[in-house]
Length: 162
Image 1 (cartoon, rainbow, N blue to C red):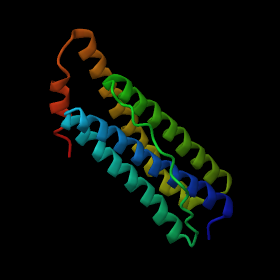
Image 2 (image 1 turned 90 degrees about the vertical axis):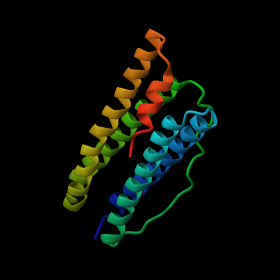
Image 3 (image 1 turned 135 degrees about the vertical axis):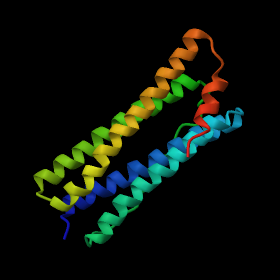
């Protein structure tokens, strides 16, 4: 059985993952409205991944006899008109999620919750990839801005995801 402390912390992380999904869906909609379907697709896939992360935590609680408590999801911003600033926000958000996952892992260690530690190892590895992907896109957008190259090339590349 999972401790109440661990259960509450995982429920908070579920909310953060579902918020991440909303955030990326909001960004996706903004790019779609500006006729940048590649950016939109990349962020839409990212939104789906974040929902999947929330469900992985949800399933862990259910499997351990815990109680899932879904809380209200905060509304994300909707003003995503600057491509570089948007992806810098993605990068910063992923760093926040990494910090949250790391704190959750530290709690699992303190609680001696070995099943949670094993489950959270997947998230720790996943966050390395998430931060790397966001950083690469930010670097590419910075290069595009510096060289005045059309953002459509990057949009086309991002559209190949999935």
